[in-house]
Length: 422
Image (tube, rainbow, N blue to C red; front, side):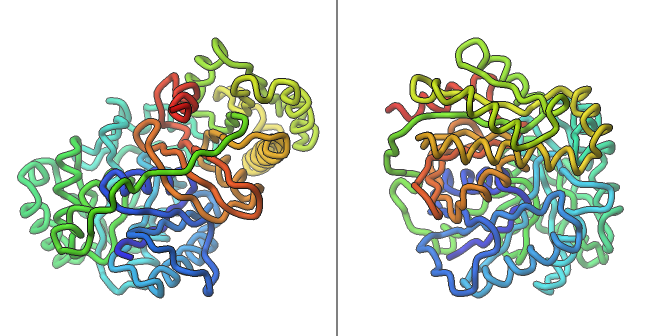
């Protein structure tokens, strides 16, 4: 095994896995910290997916360190802490605290931080994160129900979260290539900086940043920064040709979508789906009971499963989310929706669904946990950052696509299942 990664949510993990597979690395995603006696998969990269993005900071640190210990024992040569391309976190963490703990555990003293993913319109310029051309705090992320992002200056955000100091590798340096980036990061480390926010506005920048970090013990960022890592291993003679690293077996069964994300992208995808597919919308404000919500959704779906994909959504616009949070509290509202969607996913599988798209990072974590999934073998991409996966665990094998709320084209839900027809 070459690369060991720790992701702070499940969709982010599959996003990273997809990038590595695209680069020719055989990749498996494991759900939760693996037990010490778990056999090591025969792959080039392992991504341990945690549900730590919104967990208490101490819990996020402990789980991340446990995952690191397992990956070290498994023989990983380099480590990656993966977080969202919109730097999702609270003012106090968890990106900074977890990164601090990993830097200390690896005794490396320094790590770069770059969430950029230009293919999905995430760019970093002068240390500021842009989403589709808008500053992060003006992109809709300021309304995120769990991790509202109100500052686009990543140097400032990470400085508030970390015990270390944060520097910047600006665009003018990044645009000069890998050697210039490497020299700039070395200088920042020698000046006592623990982190460097690294600008990136093109894929070529990400490849150069990855090349510059070939000898780093730890890399932190979004999946885009992994674009340059397979080439490092290949140049070192460590990565052989794996044929088609994303080939998956065919799974027969019915199709469904369950959505919990309230992002603009997912809301637009649901709007498009309503024109073509049967859609059931959960109303947690009217019925704040997870069991009752799931029972209503499954009763609606029971005579529709099998004909065409069914869509069940707990997603809602910001004003409805705010009303539910005001009534129940932010944590209780999120937990209610996650439990309801997880129960629905379990019920759909019991009714014959074997191919499922799950929209939303927290939603995906709840669903995968409820279904007892332990590993995901990564297949071909549907849209950038979202692959189909073969999910294995305590029950029947499933095809799952775990979609970050912000990812995917407007027709994503239809496109996903069309891609399986061939």
